[in-house]
Length: 595
Image (cartoon, helix red, strand yellow):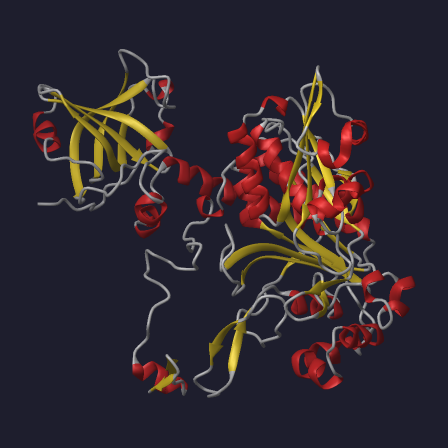
């Protein structure tokens, strides 16, 4: 027979009892974490959000409570009344380790089935099992800490932006479909049959309209939804810090975000100090092979195309050849080199070309193609020393106006840096990436598309290249990167209607198409739009990094799987025919329309 809570009131959280509380009468409530029955003494570890405390049921001092404690099992929900006493032997592994509670009464508020995995910091259960029983997974102390950290980070961000004069303003969840980038998630309208709302991929247009509305400084912590194809560690729905400012210089936005990140990092005990480093996009690609470079270690790229020219007919590579030096890796085994080669091919490399530098000279399969002098030139060009491994690579696929060898070499750099333990995990290296191209070539569509979005500002001196040389147009966009992860991106926006019209034309949108997609925004631009700009930071990724987790799912309360499923709620799911009929929708399956 279960007990009722009645008027019983909790006096202390379990994890907050300390030595000064000895002698106090307390009422605790929580879950049975562990139970140990020693006959006359029964011990339970009682757990709530704040932590764990040991409770003792002594048969001599509290026979009724002791008898009831024999019924307890893992994850039962209980209320315990007792007195705080000092433990005979302190337990330094828990915060309450100096004390325990001698129970006088016990209320069993609910029982529990045996959980499918233990409620511990580390579990061996598969991620699928954990997500299916997410309500149990969230009881684990590690997940509690992550969710608490997330709360404190977001709270501190709100406080910081309020102090800086920003208004928090909510933008619509149901809006118009304006296809750009990923697919929209569509919501059919029952009232307006045959018409659809779209869930926001970002509040981009609305935050720009808020600047047109004179709000001056806006932010919100908002949910965004993007129907993207499968990509590792991405979420169908995610959380952004979204902000916009009127009349800003680029540096004004940087100053705001640096202040925000300084205080957000401090919540996690991480020291971040602005101003953050700046790196031009072309420079980042040339040196690190990435627009989100990990600056916690060196191993910069070297263009060695001219040295490899004699080997072009034999190796049949195209484009450029990039090389990196892996310090101390000349001793790598054939197995390790084969693993590196397989990885390189999986990321789009034509192959890898290696040279080992030792005290006895340079050994390499390339000797036949490059000769001893060519190998010597290669080692000198990349600054290789005795004991180093030179790894060169070329890309299998070539894309117009893009050096794909840099992307491949950049990923090989990260692979080697990780395997050689060259990355200083104690560092927090922020960097602003600027100077992006305004357009990028889409292989799938065979045309130029926005590298960011069609409202990104363009350098004034490049406006006349929109129609003639779009690949030369420079963007007023910028990204914030931390330890090789893109935290967010933003830009100074286009605020002139004539420039916006030319931008749409450069993207291949007719005036009619632009008006169909963005008509209300284009109308707003005609009413005195101020210069404005902003940024959006991915809060899930910020918290993931500060919590030192490797997956976004560890810092989101109810995440989707990599296949965009909610295993706990069994979503997405089919709906009944009545709902579909109300919406005027018929489903097509295997080419057949079903009523």
